[in-house]
Structures are given as C-alpha cells and as structure tokens.
Image (cartoon, rainbow, N blue to C red; front, side, top):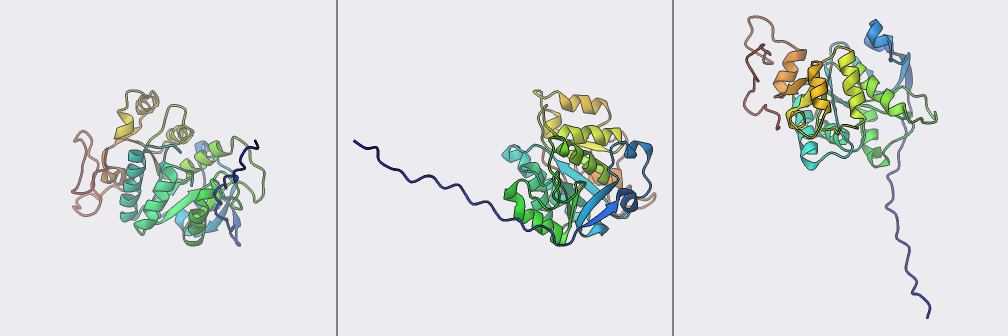
Length: 265
C-alpha cells in the first residue's frame, strides 16, 4: 500500500526589506569630535548612516539598552519599560536591532514617541534578523541607522562584536538588561568599562546567583540600576541650587526614585 502523500509544510514568508535609497559615509571624528586614544583603539575610521545624523550630535544624550537575544518575558518587559522611560526624558535609546532585548527597546522607544538609533552588525543594505525588516526601515526613515560596514560587504563572525564596541562608543552609557555568562552583550559591557563610560546592570540580573559576570563588572565599577532618574542624573547632573529637572545622584544616600520612576527589578 502506498504511503499517503502529505502537503509539504510551508515556511512562513519573511518580510521584505527595502534598503535605504540614501546612505552617507562619514568620518567618526566628524560626528563625535576628536577621539581620545582609548576611543581610537577600536573605533572605525568611518561609519555609514541612513536617517537623521543629528541624533549623534553633542547635545543629544544617548543610552544603549542591550541584552540577550533569548531574553525572558520579564527581561523583555523590563527593557521596554526602561526604554520608554528614557524616551520620556528625551534621551535617545540606542540598541542593535537584534532579537530579544534590542527589539523590545527600539519598539518601546518608538511607542513612547521617543528617538532611537539602530547600530547594526551588517551593512545598511541588509536586515538581520529579517523579522525586524519593518522595524529597521522605520528607524532609518524616521530616526537613524548606523553601520561601520560598507554596502554589500560580506559578513564575518566578528562583525557583531565590532558592532557592540561601536554602540558603546556612540552611547554616553550602556544598560545590560539581561544576559548570560556567554552572551555577546558582554563585549559591549567590557568596551563601555574600558572607555570609562557608565555601565549599568539591571538589578534583577545583578542579583542572580547563577551568573558570574555581574560581580566581575561590578568590581570594575559597574552600577546596579535602581531607577531611570539615577541613570539620567549620572549623565546630566542637576545644576547646583536647582530643585527642578533630573534628580541628583548623591553619594551614599541610596537610590533616588520619584513616583512612577522606578525601574522594575
């Protein structure tokens, strides 16, 4: 007896990606100003941009929100809440357009009416993962998409580590929401510390006893994230004598949290 024929299972159709029609290559020093010797070590000489280059201006605060591609549902929720709070403070949310934490951060910033920068590990002509094609198009049309890789260049396994280092360079601070001991996110954490920029670790991750990396970075000066105001105050201290605006981070007083401003642990 012949075996019954079954219809082959159809693979879900991947979204089509429409690459930017206009891209510009700019020298990093033109965008960020003169680089320090530490910044020069891993900085590319130039980057490719599509979108609003003003988001890289000196007057615009930028915070990277990064983490695992396979984050838990709680990790995704925390990333989204943090990104939305940063957006409400007028801080640009920087992330890598990867699955997991990155996508949650970008989408939350957009939904909150904020600005976001996507720093990708492929040329601007490619979308990876393809599931984020529409998100990547939205970012280059209305915000900013950045890559250090020339259009149509072939990829290399080290490209995403280089992307993470570039994200650290372009951001005034980085926040790791959730990551395992072998996560590629740790390359950005290491570069942030090496550059002398503030590195924040979400408390829910910093207190996990099954992870080794948080303690290693806390010993190097990383900060446990208590509230978005704490982060903003580190970047934009309140002027002396003023009681308006962002809360000041006062040494030894513990977390400073306004109503509604605490980041969920």
